[in-house]
Amino acid sequence: MLVLAGCETHTTIVGNIPGPAFPQARFASPGSMPNSSVQTSKDARPPTNLGAPELNVEIGRCVPAITPNVEAQLSTLGPSLSGQMLQSEFRLTNTGTAPCLLPPPGEPTLQVNACALVEPHAVSCAPDSPNPNFYVSQPTAHGLLYPGESTRFVLGIHNKKQHDELALELLYAQLRVDVRDPNRPTKDGFELVQPSGLSSHEGNTSNLQQLIVSPSLTAYPAHVDIGLVSSACTTQHPLRLVNRGLIPITLTHFSTDDSCGSYVKANSAQPLPILLGAGSSLELDLSLAAPDGPLECHLIAYAEETEPITVPITLKPTDSSYVSEQFVVPAPQADILVVVDTSASMELHQSKVNEFLKTLTDLMLFPHHKLAITTIDGLFGPPVIVHGTQDTSDALELLEPSPSAYEQGLESAYLALTESDWLRPQASLEIIFITDEYDLSPGLMKDYATLYHAVKAPLPPEKIRVHTVTALSECAPAILPTGASYETLSQATDGLIADLCGPIPSAFSLEVLAVSLNSNPIFPLRAVPADTGEIKVFSESNKSEGTWVWHAHSNTMHMTGDSSQLYPGALVRVNYPLCKQ
Image 1: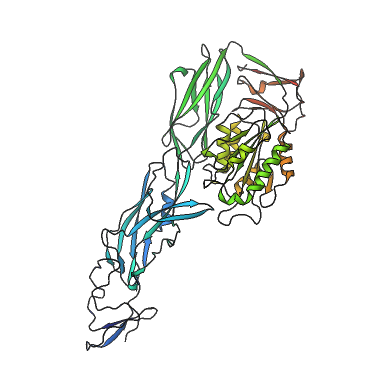
Image 2: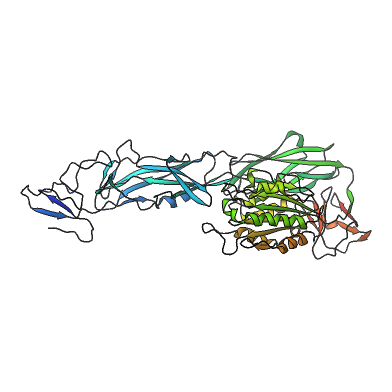
């Protein structure tokens, strides 16, 4: 008797052992048994009446391996753009000491099944349902794959999402590999062997993930209103292009429509083409000359990865070289946007969220406060605006649990601010996020603070705050982390943070409303000052003692927080030149 050490299974072979060491026959199908004297069952012993000596031989194991690691290789392919095809080559190798069995031609060795993220944040895979965004070439080998042998296959990604369908999505898939060990029979065939280099595919578990993205380029401001331009000189105005996506964007050139003529030029400190990395921006300097009459035209920015973006430009000629404007200090105002997570995991907290909204509206001072409510997946619908009323019934209908798993609160807030006209120019902005989980927005967290400022032309930093109500203690979901990105943004904007796990205290609402009205006014100018050092501000006919700051992108004046407050109704005059002296 010959026993090979370190192995678990022994097989009794009767008669002469046929050479070579491994049989040459290929099996017809995964479930068939070989036409051989080799018996692979522990319990069934072959007949011993052939007159040959009995010999026990350890036949070893089929040990398949996929190289390189599929999950690691997939991460190097993406993110994947709309319509893009990416592929990577892999090898399936038998690293064991006995043959592996692959299905015959016509029966797939590899299959990629579709999986979806469902609430509460579990991935569900549909067996035998191919994922249309993945494709796989079948291995060339079939039948027995001997130790040391390998076969090639290609795993690819074809992003079939529409360009504007979604800015960001994580595709889940399940790669199933049909490799069987002919030395280990089961009731229905042979034991299925999981290759190394690939995580478990048992049950409904996904083992492949791929990031699907659409490029996102934003102009800030979206509309450049220069106001008055002196016919005696040209003026300058900044325009920023921001890459809000997760992939680089290559800017190729800029152009203006025919009506712009020679009046508008876009100048960049860098030569074209310019590669904008994820989250990065390019500062353009618009040079504008006075036309014969009012001008409305467009600047167009072209990029290789995304559709061109068009920025409207408006200006009016004037013979004057100096401007004097008078403003009345308004009563304090605050626009409040509440972004609510309506995913299934929030159903536990729905009653307290409704109570919080009722408390908030009861404590508001109308018309000083204005409220808008949207959901954390608000990219699929506009916000509900509560106009000058304490009735939140329409908003509460919006907050029914939603099956959506796209929890993109930061992006939803941005869309609610940009795609509606409910914001008031003089009002401070308070954003309240209510969620039990992490944010999955396509942009970078640090950029959203800048984007929120840009929305309101922009407001000075102290007039925009982000507040967070999130799971800080025992009620947080176990699968994904809680709202750390929202908390970070709240801390960066001097906002407030409350715990969702207990009742949301009414003091939280009071504090939000109190800080919302504690800000200095801002004044949008009709024209762009040619020399900011020559801007003069007077309040009540006297030179103002406050510290005033001019914002280039918004072309606004505002007082800093350490200045003395101006009472509502006070007159403020701002004088500035249209041409440099």
